[in-house]
Length: 487
Image 1 (cartoon, rainbow, N blue to C red):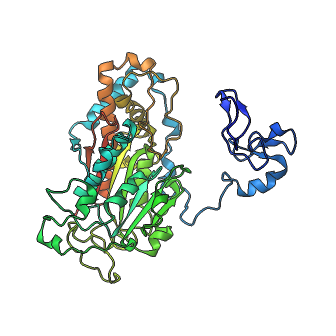
Image 2: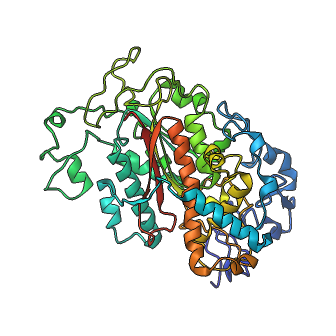
Image 3: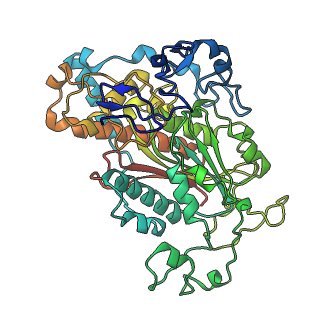
């Protein structure tokens, strides 16, 4: 590039071998970041709140009041550590690297693992589903490999929601670890003109099917008139990080409430969220790759938040998506009552579908299956070791230069192609054969997930673990689904 583009910065970036492309102010040659090249004016300094950007020294105080990295007032739904679990369960003292363990310790751990998983009724089933709303995107040649993998996962999650009768209007979908919010986007697209399930041999695309007058699954559907307004559907996106390229901003004109909560799941009190208090719709929890402890935090957030679930009244019979629900006493006319759940009130839980990953980032304090482990003679020390060994299921024998198991254990983002677990590749390799490591890792994951299923059972839910996509799409391909046992 021989000269800067007109209207752009004139600073030459040596590393990129081109001129800076930032837009400059009227009459200026350099952008804000390179304004010091002008040789006049106040010098720029690093922002004390966020070193990733700079600010002119004479405007520092004004900038600190509006900087995006400033500490903001806590929202009303922020309750510190409400979903963190008991402080007595802190497992910091038990986090011992596998490389520091002797042969006898490793053999003892493997024996305990085999004993614990023996006789468990917790098998995984292969169940790869899809949903018609993503048909066109899955066949769009403009989508690359990465986008195609995410679309396959989203399609299968929607398929599981539909199979369980959870994909419908008259409820609020809470997406934990939402990231850009693509899963909520597709849920909204699937329910945009939803009037119950259809089957038709004619149209092949989703737009054609939505307007198709062809055969339907039952006579009742022919007179089905589900409400199409935004009053009977809510989408709540929970993400603790500020995210770029959010898709929920594109739906502000659709009349369906899309609300984003920038808060850690650990501190989220759903019963105090204004959107949920305005209209008491039943809840459906969803998540695509909730890293490690974030899954346990989400389960506690849904099923243990005080005031969210009132278990004094037995759940109603769960209806098919096409059946009109009988109103409960006190329901407002025209509202969609809860299909089923542990109880009435604001946000009774209809069910959940969460794609699991990164078991090596779980923590004993947050883990919901502590009672399950204790019943098998296991505790925080064994749990910590099994979490580390669970990475063997997906890492294979790839070396890593850094142990990430202690970094950010409750990461809630799920937009990366893979969450690569850390693998310890030193002394412990001598004790466990390479051919056995992957199987040991899978058993560790299964045991941890069985503890989550045991927790759901104690809360009155029937749960299931399924391989919702193939390993070619993602190695973390297990989906946890649950609905009330009475359903």
